[in-house]
Structure formats: C-alpha cells, structure tokens
Image (tube, rainbow, N blue to C red):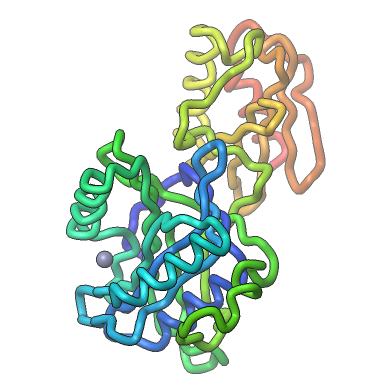
Length: 307
Ligand SMILES: [Zn+2]
C-alpha cells in the first residue's frame, strides 16, 4: 500500500541497478521485520547523491518490527575500507518498513536524522526507505519492493523526495571490493520499484537554488509571475503537472491527459513566440499565437482540439 502523498520529485539519486537488486534481496529476507544498512558514495555539484556502494545489515545488527540497528563494527570496518581504497563517504542510510505501509520516513526517522545532522555537522544526509508489498500468487515474484529516497539538509525542516537515475549494471566499486571484507551478499532480486528519472531532466526544485541566465523569459519578475500563473492553471485544469528545465534552461511542463503524455515547451522568448506542444513525440505549434494575453487559454484550446 502506498500511503505517501504524491509529490513531485525534488532531487535525484544516482544508483547502480545491481545495488537496487541487492537492497530488494535484503528486504525480502525480512518480510516482517525492519532491516537496513548504509549508503556510500559522493555528491554532485547540484547536491545529488551518487551511491557507489550499498552496505547491508551486519551479522550483529538488530531487526525489530519497528526499528533496525546496524551492527556498528560492520559499518565502521566497511566505512574505513571504502574511504581508504576509494575515497567514498558515508552519505546516508537505508531501512525497510517491511509491510507497514509507510512509504516515507516516520517521525522518529526524521528526528534521528535531524539530530545526526546537528551532532556531526553534516550539511545533508540521504535516507532510503523500502517497503514490501505481496503480489498475487500468479506472479513469479512474490514481492514488490518499493524504494524511495529522501534528502535531509540542515537548512530545511522537511525532507525532500527524490527520484532515481538508475545506472546500468554493477557498480565498479562493488566489483573492486569483492573479498575485501566479510559482507553477506543477498540474492539479487529484480522486484524493486523506484520513481525513475534521467540525468537530462532537471527538476525545478533542486537542493541548491537554481541560477537563471539573464535575458530568459522567466528571469524577470513579470516572467516569474507568468510562469507561476501557467503552472497553476495547468495544474487546475489537467491535474498533476510537472515543471522541468533542460540543461539549456528551456522550461517545459509535462502532463498526462486522457492517458497521453503531453509536453508543453516554452521557447526562450516566450510569450512572444508560441510554445511548442508535443504529444506522443509529435510536435505541433499553437496556430495564430498572440503573446500578449490569455496564453494559457490559447494552449488549452489547442490541446482540446486534438483530444
Ligand atoms: Zn523508519
């Protein structure tokens, strides 16, 4: 059961596919108890966590119905090797809420992380939360393991919700670490599900304030107001609307209308030039575009005509 609120993702977590297979494997080992471990890697310029190695539960870890305590010695040993051999840092933790139906950090989890941020003077910390859901018997896989990522920063009161960039295959660090220390390797399971994103998509809300180049239509207060108005009108009319930027700073919205994927792209000189609409990878422009007023209504009419 996914009880979390549907929220737009605010940051990206980069992780190798096979590290997700391992998390799913560990989580499936304890369908009624919490299990967990630690995340090692580094951070990108924009503050995105890059996971290079996922540590599972150590031999002396404690698994309870509503808590998990990592084997400290196991964590320290792994941390020392990963740091000295590969310069990796302890960037976060993960644990499973098994079948509790809580897809996000509990209040207790949040308190623990915020206290840790303060105590160790860390600017940010990543928390992975996994959930197990039983699938119907007809499936070959018994479970679905949902994995969410949450970013805690010392400057904000709430955790941010992440989406994953899944890197193919095995982490090179993992390949290199084989046999370096005793780490119980789980069965690799493909039962995981994450909210996916790509390296190219740029969520509007990032962990660092975004910079907007001079001269862009949404760099001015007037442009900002128009962008906000457009976003609010699209959300009101079509439900979930997501706002993105390309690396070239072009702003675009994505929408799902009658099960079709729509994209509304705003050119750099919007609203003078017409936005481009893309549906099922075909482009169309809004005919007889007038940039001075009722911009949303013109786009809306164009969308409605093609439905
Ligand atoms: Zn928890």
